[in-house]
Amino acid sequence: MTERLPIAIIGAGPVGLAAAAHLHEYGLPFVVVEAGPRVGHNVLSWGHVQLFSPWSETIDSAAARLLESTGWRAPNPTSYPTGRALVERYLAPLAAHPAIQPALRLSRRVVAVTRAGLDKMKNAGRERAPFVLHLTGPDGSEETLAARAVIDASGTWATPNPLGASGVPALGERALASNIFYGIPDVLGAHRGRYAGRRVLVAGSGHSAFNAVLDLAKLAEEAPGTTITWVVRRGTMGQAYGGGARDALPARGELGRRVEELVARGAIQLVTGWHTDRLERAPDGIRVFAGERSLAPVDEIIVATGLRPDLSMLSELRLGLDPAVEAPVALAPLIDPNVHSCGTVRPHGVDELTHPEPDFYIVGMKSYGRAPTFLLLTGYEQVRSVAAALAGDWEAARRVELVLPETGVCSGPVAAGGIEVSCCGPQAAAPARASALIDLTPVGQVALLDAAQASCCAPVVQESCCAPEAKDDCCGTAAGEPAGASCGCL
Ligand SMILES: Cc1cc2nc3c(=O)[nH]c(=O)nc-3n(C[C@H](O)[C@H](O)[C@H](O)COP(=O)(O)OP(=O)(O)OC[C@H]3O[C@@H](n4cnc5c(N)ncnc54)[C@H](O)[C@@H]3O)c2cc1C
Image (cartoon, rainbow, N blue to C red; front, side, top):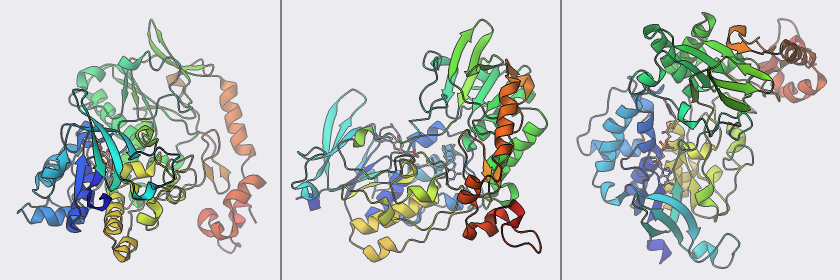
């Protein structure tokens, strides 16, 4: 009975729809359940943002084969889509294909996934029991869907990290929700009125934050009075601007380069080493605090501090997730930003994505848990491998050939306190721009710098970073010196 049930795909984003295309090629029945009223629901909420991947790296191979059979013409492979174009020119035609459209359930949110008649504790008959998905509709209606396997491609976009630096909302963050935007607002379009002429704080150091500050800087050129304060937890930007010209994705490298230039010429007030713990509404605006320190008041806050997976609907399944990254245990060490940020992930597919719960897979953006480096190409390769495994084609499932474009940076571990550690120890924290700060404790800044320098080349750092095999690429060698001599870690 279970064998004849469809495979349930949660989410009709780029990776969920690619999974559908691969399952179709294997002749396996499937259902795609999508919470939003349209496919690409999450992508549309950042539809104004241009991707840094060209079209050639945003289209799945099985999806392309399916689309080409209808006379669809792929967009220019070297041009760059916006999120909206990705949906309109690729995902929407794919979802309308007769092989996929009948299997699509829009406006249905999966709120729970379980094994029929078994809670998480029960062993007996578990592997043979079908999965049961609980769905809700916009009108509150409830229904269930039985499935032989589940592919969770529900992304992480709807569960952003808070502004609070400790992973929970800062005191006052919830009360000030109407002045806080989580994600990337359409600063130059639909949300222009909200930010023009206002004092705006942006938090976060990834590409989403880059997009927000770049748009705000453009707005500031046109709308007098617009000011931008940018806070990051890390003690120094170091390699956070990315690999620039060394990035294998030129548009991604360019984002960081342009932001760095804006900071250098003072268009943005960058505050490093900032750990927000409290917000307050004051007569002159919103005050943002980190301990005893406070920033100059602002009118609006944009939080782009990363995303996290929503695991609540999976609470009755047996997951094997890394406790820190919240990615499958075998995948987590490959993508953990505490360990590296090279952007190169060794080939991975069904083996790394397997959980203790048989026939259940988390793929796409959600498979990376809290790690920020996910690329569509990764997701497409994942679902190709998972679909092959579900079809019993283990040779294809394990023939994973994933070559990701490198970021051009390979940073070392990040020390507690956000100080970026090179092989030789932490780089000194750049002093925060005083003009963005009031009540800045000079003593605190000095202490931060001292701590950074004192631990430079300390034995503990040498042990963790300067392992013999890492010396050459980590430390580099000056001409004529033995490996590692340049950073004193022989
Ligand atoms: C601004 C931005 C720019 C990016 N640029 C690039 C780029 O240039 N190149 C690149 O390779 N990657 C890029 N990425 C990263 C990544 O490729 C995208 O986030 C991509 O959308 C991930 O695809 P996905 O299918 O895994 O998840 P999503 O696109 O997030 O899709 C998940 C889908 O699941 C649905 N859903 C969620 N919960 C449920 C539920 N409970 N029940 C039913 N449905 C549900 C959502 O509505 C959504 O439609 C970018 C990401 C962002 C945020």
